[in-house]
Image (cartoon, rainbow, N blue to C red; front, side, top):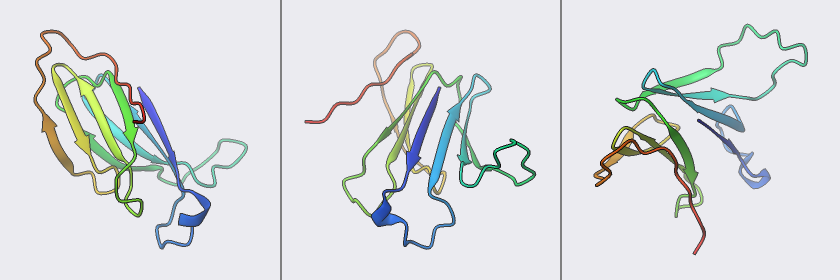
Length: 115
């Protein structure tokens, strides 16, 4: 499972040292947040790209980015795996909430829609 976030041009003046992030989820129970800025065309890169490793606690089946109501804040990162749904701040790595679900089997997908 994966997700991508790029700052909009109006946000690029902020003091954060990157503008494009990717998130990957794995059966090893982790979510990794990656810096995608300035990757060389030849693919050879000795710079550490993994910014953080988040522990979902179960194999990660799905990731979803949701806009934050506060436009100056990063989007929410949702992760699903097992019977668990978690909401993260992808920049700090903090799990904001663990959402109780009534699923009796593994959650395998997440979808969002605008109102």
